[in-house]
Image: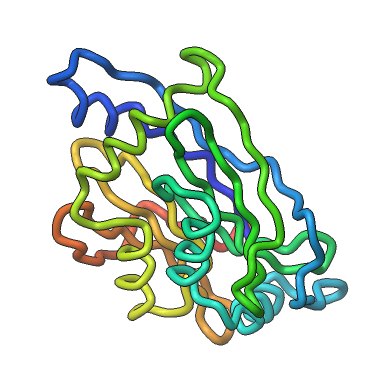
Length: 207
């Protein structure tokens, strides 16, 4: 599965303009889990579509439930979640903006238990202020959990991330069908409405 790097600078600028502050923020995950996942998928000698289908089928814990588990373990605001296979072990990687740091929490997609977490402290303007991003996302009517739940009507959600799409602030969700076909969707911050991401014509080549 692909792992996105999410830039939330425009979002933070719009929401926090009244406070006179705006910070360019890049949120990414550098991978790895502290414990072993109970879910393992076969990816050797199979097509990308089959690998995608196997991973989606192996995730008994839904994206919104993985986010909820991560937030219970590490308080903050979820900025995204991604189903990823690391050496055959499948994990939900959840990104959280905390009061003083960026947190990355790995959740077992079979049990919903937290496998491990790590912290990356903000380093000046390069990493941005996690508290500002958290405040920006709290102002949205639709959370990462809400976006994942809404997108699940379109298929099995395998990732959800905050995205700045021009003048419209959206969550970007990816779903995987039973045959491994992937589709990207936009979930509106305000209404929670789900629409197809027409710009993602090459989504099948990113995995």
